[in-house]
Amino acid sequence: MKRRNFIQKTALTGGAISLGGNFAYSNLNNSALKPHKFNLKYAPHLGMFKELAGEDPIDQINFMADQGFTAFEDNGMMKRDVALQTKMGETLAKRGMTMGVFVIDKGGNMKNTLAAGKQEYIDIFLDGCKRAVETAKRVNAKWMTVVPGGFERKLPIGVQDGNVIEALKRGAEILEPHGLTMVLEPLSDSPDLYLQNSDQTYMICKGVDSPACKILFDIYHMQKTEGHLIHNMDLTWDEIAYIQIGDNPGRKEPTTGEINYKNVFKWIHEKGFKGVLGMEHGNSKDGKAGEQAVIDAYIQEDSFL
Image (spheres, rainbow, N blue to C red):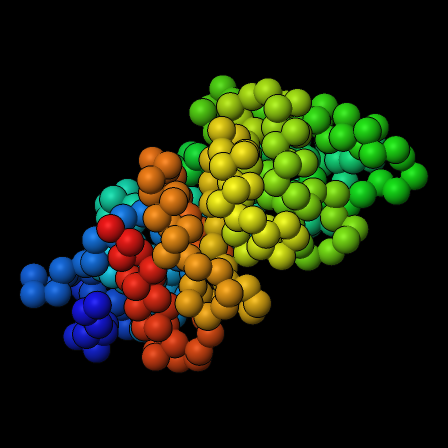
């Protein structure tokens, strides 16, 4: 495995694309230092390489592209200034990068639960879907994360399932005409979250029955809640539209925990997956060395061919 010379790659220039920062990361590739060619579309997020690339969001996206990453995700995109959204979208297009997920704003993972069937919660969710359409246009996004909320403990689980399906059908009616897809993310964060397992999410997607409603399979979360990653991905594969990454324990980059990511990536590649794999994890080490360790880990685990 060839280690990158990140000192050379992080030369700064005032003439690079920027929102006005004093120091900008150069987006001019050194011909002697070609970007690594990854087999899959791994998507870093803002802050992951801020020590190497600087604080400016545009500089960070350019740095990601210069390392060979061909996708990008940003959970908080809907909350960013419209001008910044537009500039980020333009930069991604210029660098040939695919925009990954952002989160549909419905008030937080546990709030306004769709399982309750309450009209006020549904209206908040649908308003988020409508606003997400406009954000998606600015950044050329296709996928948006949805977490239905918590359990409504007073209701039977079948009724909760029905309530969630009906609400998501309404959301799909907004997104589908624009070619957009909400991806439902089962999580391991709390036993009070309604959506926790891949088979449950598969059932919900089948109930909604729309190309605008699919599964976000977060490998970190699913390792915690159910394990058998390849087996369960295979069972639910026809509904999986997006994948996220994080090792367990710790939710850091691959190679820092128990998951055999090289084998998992190889299996995903052999399935012909052309979508995005979001790097939704932290860095195991601080500073520039820690950021370089993330890049090196992906180069290592992506070398499955």
